Image (cartoon, rainbow, N blue to C red; front, side, top):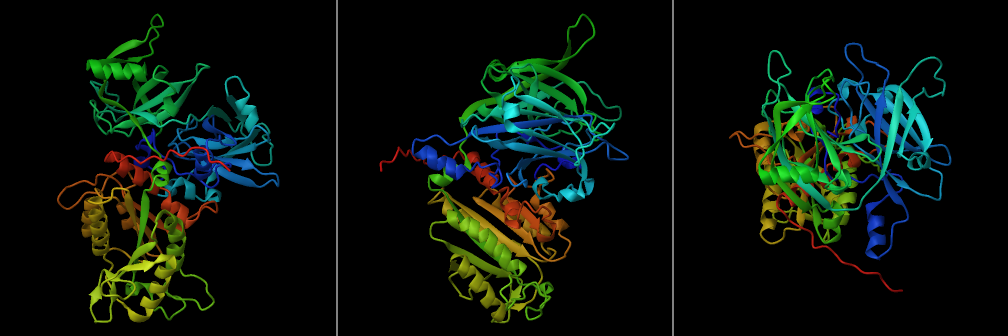
Length: 584
């Protein structure tokens, strides 16, 4: 979930690579849509995109039994003194000297002074299942802050600036709060990337009672001789011959095929003291050569003898290597791909009598929206702009309809046949009407509405591969059909479908976090089939912590990535628009 690595499973996940990160509304003035507007007319954007890489040293240790789990937050300081958040790094597990992999993007404007503020926090382990973007910062331990102006970084010959951290009143006294180093690089606009499948063999065992748990960290060597981490694989448990998931590196990350990369293999330790198994230095061109020659490269370890590295038995192999064009979410959307919105509403009795003000379904005469209305409105208002006809399927589940039977997938508008309504307003009207015509019942079953949405998504494949479907499920309860739901989700993982789940009320939503599969473990069906991709994003309304992000932002955060995973996995390319300059 958003690379929050204060838990053990999260710390074993991969970070970085050519992943499409969602564009934030708070990213220092950059907006993909505005950028596209200028470029489509043959104009250059009015700014330069800069990526900031962050690392720290000698941080305060706020934990008792382990080291701090640090995360950095970057702000732009506005003219009125207010701070606008630009981005957050991932959380690094048990480290006082973190080198964060997640970059923070900022738009560099030559003509203005751009003050930046950096805050470093120790993230409490109880927030291991919360996306970093939604963490409530006041609940985390503050480790220190630093300030500078963006031009101070980009005008350095090394494009790196190291700042001493201090407490918020600016007084450090005799206490050392550590240091923060910021490295800036201009973003290279390129769709080119390389995808590789790599494995190692005969690794040295660094564990006593079991085998090593290896992972790779890839760093790019910069002009000044230092290195910037760009990718970390997932951890393969208890294996001296690990095969990692395919990794994808963009030209933006490695610069050119001849740039040297440092590839380090570590044995994962939950303490954060990962043990170096071995390393090697290869460029992307070297890795391509390994693949063509079907040969391996030996790992080495620094040696005190004559200054030469010790050559190890362990080797790195490149089993697959391909160069490809990796299109962005905007490439697809601007060339006609659509997101088709669907919604399913929970009508189980646990919501409470809609006539009572304490019911989750209570319609307030003053116009104040209940949680169901808020979720429909906020998500629908975003997605409707990506749907040309704005006709949305809308269902209810867990309610007793007018014929006296309990249904787990009934049309929200009361129609026997037509399940589509006109616009978000149509969903809101159908929901209000259904509260008068449908009795709340139960139990809470997702299987039928997921299967219905999957049927629609599946039928679209035969005639239109530019449509992608988004089902919003709003619920207050604990699932009764967890395994049936898992089976439906595993089947649907092959389809152009994402499922957003909003939890309302105070129920225990632990099951929903299992469906979200953000702990790195893919869903598995009752027959043993594993989901081909993660298609679920779950957000409980009560746990959206940060004032910087709304429920809808937290819910839609993973949607562009899920969309791209589907399109790229099936090699579906956008029909790119070639728009020349317009004449006035």
